Image 1 (cartoon, rainbow, N blue to C red):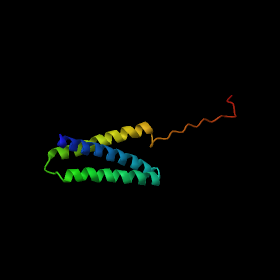
Image 2: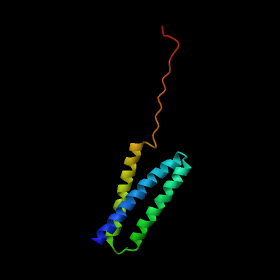
Image 3: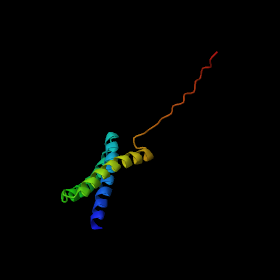
Image 4: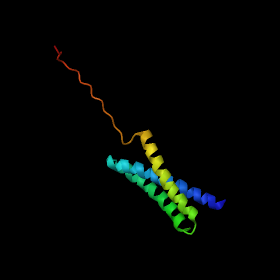
Length: 103
């Protein structure tokens, strides 16, 4: 039971840090330095925690699988969340009123 909780911790931590990395990357591209720095701070804390758990138990294949599966799911969830909050999308619609009439 304790081992399963360890796998779950690694899995959830990886989902979190990879999703945060997606958000941080968008913030960097948009020039939002402060937001990117704050997100990066928490991202690294989560990453180091997960990595430390995996490295301390390299002989446990479950740790590696949880780490890799969390990374894959984190990419998927990060993209999904970004689509929902639309950080990277901006749409502008320009409507021009013509003063001349066509003959």
